[in-house]
Amino acid sequence: MAKARLKTAITGAVSAIALIAGAVSVQAQSFADTLVAAYSNSGLLEQNQALLRAADEDVAQSIATLRPVLNYVATADYADPIAPGGDSFSGSVGLQFSWLLTDFGASRLNIDLQKEIVLAAREGLRNVEQQVLFRAVQAYAGVLSNIALVELAENNVRVLDEQLRASRDRFEVGEVTRTDVSLSESRAAAARAQLAFDRGQLDQAREEYRAATGIEAGELSAPPGPPTFPSTEDAGLTIARQSQPLLRQAQRDVTVNEIGVRLAQARLRPSLSLSARATTSEDLNNSSGVGLQLSGPIYQGGQIASLIRQAQARRDAARGNLINTQFNVDQLVANAYVNLNVANSRITATEAQVAAAALALEGGREEQQLGARTTLDVLILEQEFFDAETDRVTALTDRFVAYYQILSSVGLLTVDNLGLNVPTYDVAAYYNSVQGAPTTYVSPQGEKLDQVLRALNRN
Image (tube, rainbow, N blue to C red):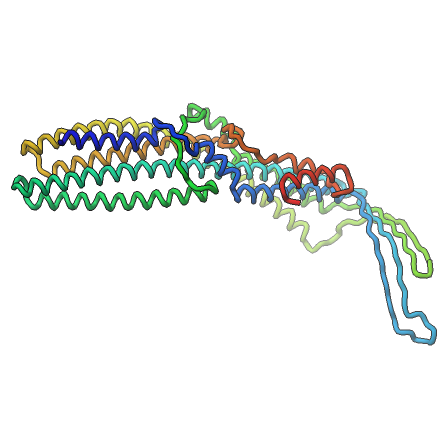
């Protein structure tokens, strides 16, 4: 009888742990399906894609400042006549033309600055992509882990309820005391409380899955094998220093602010503009003119000097942030490998713990039948077996998440690197369509832009 109960307990544990270990395979939502849904349904990604397009437009606007500007001007005036027969209405129509011939490099610097901002925004978008995918990894593992824990808790309730029934039967025949029955009742009640808690955790895990992916967590398939990742921490650090989006964005920010210093200094330079106008009035009185204008600062009350100092301070801040980001990235990589190593060690230890706890529980039950063990002794052994099973599920979950934590820390947790079958956002398509500052519906570039907008469903 005792062996049968123990066999039931072990069988339940193995089936629950298999969900995390990947020993079973069912037709259900796969891990890849989860990541694809997270990428496709992410409002955070959509937000940052739109912010990147806004940064692309800043490049177009900075280029437009170097081009001629043509405006029309129409005026109409009415005045009460002072003398009989006096004119009371006058009007004119004209064209105004202006063109910045040169500002001695200031506008070019602004174009370079806006381009660097775009490159920094692209790295920011890539970092958001990693955040979205890693959250989906955690949500997927969380659901499977909590399903396994609920199954373990349900099995524990069944075992302890059976233990309680056996204690009551033995009490009826005088083999145990009322204290033994009360101990069994206490442990059975505690097991039901743990089951209620685990079910609540599972419900929360399903809600997190829905928030992370945009879809409900149906029947999830077993996790896949480990992804390809740098085998050592040193290899991970080398890759991170080349591809980690947080670090690359910080590097771009330094360049942006270095250009910002030069742009602030360029405010001291003059600018040369060409202007022309042509007007005609209601009596066909025509006028026109062409002129050049050279202007530059003489005294601005210290504003330009302050802007230069401010730009230099922002550059220094960006350099400090780059150093800090480098340390943080190194720490992220190191922590990810530590978490993987800890998870592997815990799995080895908990496997031995589960095996030893199972043997101890089997022996304890047999010794209880012989009167060498009390009910409390057996209940303690059952709790140790349950705790060992729970620890192993947690360790397996931690190892699965640690794989993708490493990928995220080195900058490789992306749709392209994972080979997911999902249309990705092309960061260059919109930029290439607007960088020349096209006029929509007028130029060939504008027509190409319209096609891009239709593809994005944003026109």
